[in-house]
Length: 264
Image: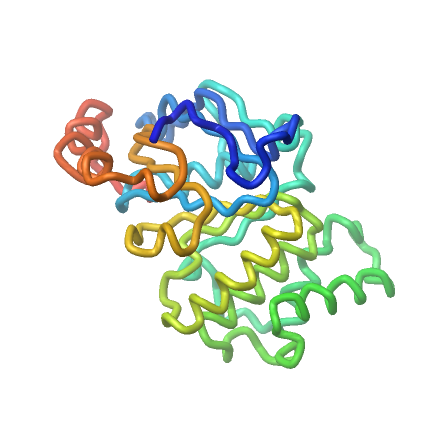
C-alpha cells in the first residue's frame, strides 16, 4: 500500500480524477495538523479515511470542503481549485457538532442544501421541491419528511444529512464519522445507500476509525496520521501499516510537530 498509488480499481481510464490532494499541509493555532498529504480518487469510488483520534481526519475533510486554508499544496475537485469548486463538494459533519434542538423537519434540512441553487431572498420553486423529494427518496426517508430531525434516530439523521448533501448536486461527498452513534443495522443500511450513490458516479470519502469493516465497506483506504501512511485497496492495510498508523511511530510524529491537542 503506497501513498503514491492513485488509481481507483473501478475506473482506470478516467482522465481527470474527481479529487486530487497534492502535498498539502494545514496548520491550526500555530500547530501542524497535516503535512505531506497526497492521494487522488476517481469517480465511482468509496474511500475510507482511516486513523486514530487526533490523526487529522476531520481537518482533511474540512480542507477538501474549502473550510480550512492550506499552508502548502493544492486540492483539485474535478480539475478545479477548491475556491472554484464550491458547488461540487458536499460536507456532512459529525453528528455531535449539529444542534439537534433546531426546530426543523427532514424536509427543511434537505431544502437547506438547495440554498446555493435557490439564491438569497428567493422562494424554492417546483424544481427545488422535486429535487428534495428525489433526494429523500434516494435515502429512503420520504416517509419521514415531516418529522422533526430531533425525533429521528441516529441512522435516520445521517440519511437526512446525506440527502441534504445530494440536494446540493455535488459529485464529491465528504462524511465525517458517519457511523458514530449509529447502530449496526442502521450503519449497514447507510452503507447500502452510499454504495448506490457511488455506483451512480459519485466520489465519497468517509472518516472512520473502524479497521474491521474496511474491506466490506470501502473500495479504497487512506491511512492517515498527520501524514499519509498508506493509500490503496483495503486489503493492503497490513499489520505493519496499522502499527505505523496507531503505534509509537505516530506518537513520535505527533511530538515532533508539537501537538498536544485533538484535531480529530
